[in-house]
Amino acid sequence: MLTQLTWQLEGLFGLIFPEKCVVCGWAGGLICKPCRSRLEPYPLAPTPVGLDGMCVAWLYDREIRNTIHALKYRRQRRVAFALADALADVVEPPPGEALIPVPLHPRRLAERGFNQAEELARRLAWRWRLPVRADGLVRARETGHQAQLGQQERQSNVKGAFVWQAQRPPPARVLLVDDVLTTGATLIACADALRAVGTRDVHAVALARSLAPQARMLQ
Ligand SMILES: [Zn+2]
Image 1 (cartoon, rainbow, N blue to C red):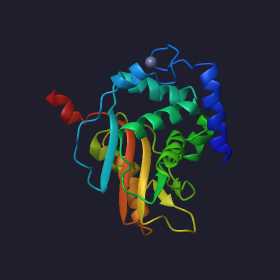
Image 2: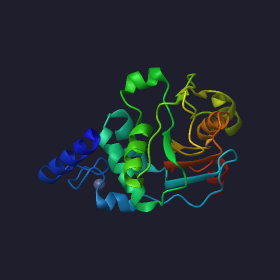
Image 3: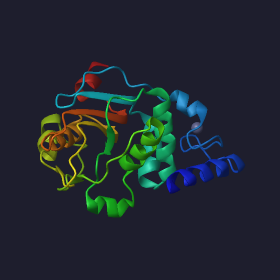
């Protein structure tokens, strides 16, 4: 309720003082229309083994990288809402009873002040009229940066890193939310933790995905 009131007030504020686009710097909203239209849709790709379905809005390229960078490192929560809105405008809601954001390790959460995946999930939940369950899935182990690792290494790096801690079990059909992915290793590790406590179906939704290394070589 309070969140929605805050969004409404921010919307009103945005009408009076138009915000600068985090990509191009012109006034026209946090992600202006021309910049939105330049985001490249992610091509159809097979679902990673371990997930029942995956939906990615955009290819992880320079434009979306700048935007997500603003979200993560300039601590602009409102960018998460703008990105979630842009995603909900181009993506049909995948099946699922509730949204679960990919959790940050508590130390990373303390550094950053918020979990960008949770901010995305909260706005998407509002758009798609679904609940958010952010109370159960936790990152029990720090996994460091995965950027330099290959697919196998990524998978073993995050294996067992997530556990379900809430007393109430997770929903049977879950929609995992993350910002960016490469191989999907983190999402698969989350799905494994959920299935271990009763979830049957795990779909994932993400803003952007970089092309897998083999796909990049083909270009
Ligand atoms: Zn722009």
